[in-house]
Image (tube, rainbow, N blue to C red; front, side, top):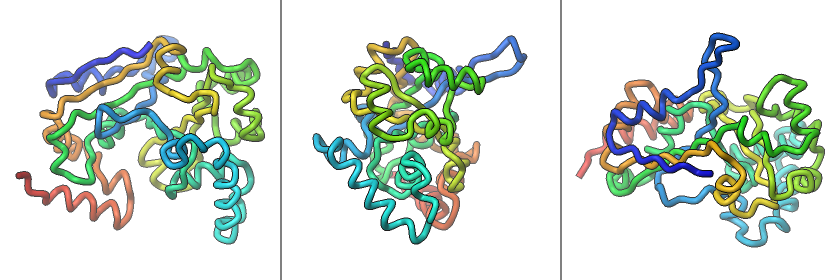
Length: 267
């Protein structure tokens, strides 16, 4: 089930930021929620592979990855350690993949929801933050995947852990069918992964519409729709928390994006 919550005042942003779960057993706050922010509330949850290759994505995925590995190997000889590592590296550099980006941080998700290439659009459309609950999603996992998580006392896979239970894309698709998907924490092969508190979901070919899957196979998914009238104020508040382009994208490109927005003159 997907619950839709509208945020139309700045005060209600607190409902999103402070919704993490307190764990009585360890006397700490430990959240199993992941978030994805997008600048337009009408955008669908689709992978770059699906957007790029349309209905041919299942046939084109493997040659796309094979060629990426072939051409990148001279720069990174370890790229073919596993298909999942190749996907992570490819995703970071713009290769269309079946991975979908999530973050463990509500503030990072709000950054992506309130980022526009054309800054005039910040006040023109509602944005969205999706929330999924990994403990909720993991109830659907095949037994060998669930057993791995229980043995490791975690609710999310590492890259090596995923490679251990699913050696190939074909095996993963067979295991998941249209009933489940895995999320994993990538290794910090790039500073952006660490700064963005990144996680990836691996969308199996059997799930052709992720939102339909979340509606029918989960109980704790939330779609937060944030009113467009709040976006500039929220964007400036995030800056005060140092959640901005120079942190999200460390280096010259991030600094340039941050300064361009900082000095942007609204109409």
